[in-house]
Length: 358
Image (cartoon, rainbow, N blue to C red; front, side):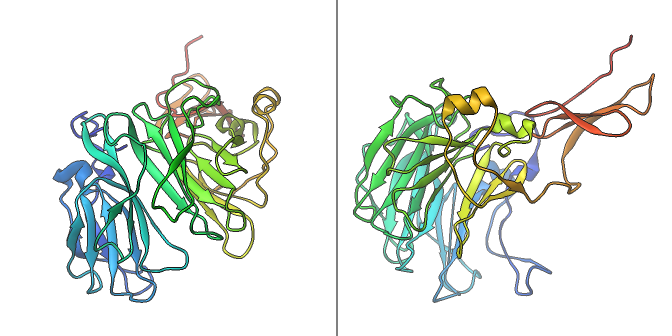
């Protein structure tokens, strides 16, 4: 929700904002605040995007967020800022622990920040900007990046535009020193919108993910509202997930925030607004067939199915038949219960629902 300013918009959802970095030394049983803290009155400036611990020096920690890059060398007791900027992403080199890649971005709502792709060889103490044709302000907003595990010279970046839709897909073959655009907004599909066509818009500020196959440097998955895959390094993309099919017991829930490949097999996990899902095999679909047939070749298991954790906004009961009720859930549809079974009656965000008088 970066750029929405929930406080100024009177949504008052203070749980959106952050308090800083916390640490556990007993496996998560208890937590204590460390030397990087924020007040919620900092609003979106309180948000941290990512925290990493050096694999060889566990007292060295790097954290990036909306106000810059911070380094600790004493296990988080104190932090120093190494670079200003609105950081979106932070990734590690698979073979060189001191080498990091990062992206900074621009928020169109506030006209703040600058877009850049960064590389560090001293674990974030200093950063150098990669060569790229992405404008620094006014055009692109959020950038997410991924490094190929099988060939770290291959680094990929996806960018969203000021409407949250697809702006461009970029590839580096020299370890992140420079990037070329493989496809842009002239592509036949806006791979970040909800309808898998060329209509503008999307949710790139809210849901954007990227992952390179560990065995094939040219195979990349992109997550937004839907999920797409390229098998040729970004020249073309085909859909893997279509959000609407979730309501037909096909495919996976939309709004994808992270895609992670299993370390010892070829399966993938995805974090999305419906929970956590896994597929054993990614099989790209044809766009037309997927939309017309309402089926998907890639099959997912939802590991959060059956857990009573859905966030419901409102509940209504039929005054003429109290066995019937409806409830609207956060990004998980409006459900109806006839006294015995649940049914989805709408998709997306469910809010207020009312039984009409006969």
